[in-house]
Image (cartoon, rainbow, N blue to C red; front, side, top):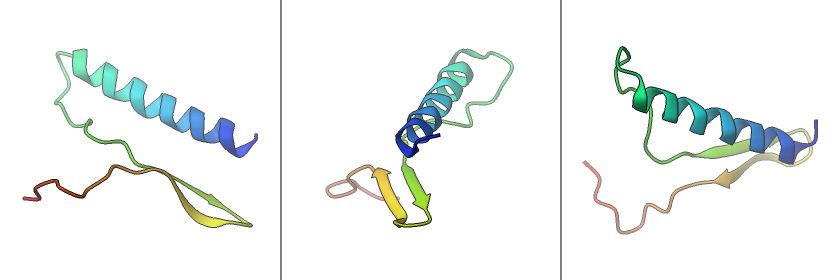
Length: 60
């Protein structure tokens, strides 16, 4: 599978899980928030694909 297809599949699965839990009455709201995606390959190693900008956000 090409790396971009794997990234797209991961994003789809995370967003689908967030949507499912959002409307599930019987499950606690345990997923959500900003999605962060990284790819790890043999040649490039660890690489951020999607990461929220944390500048200007209050922590705590």
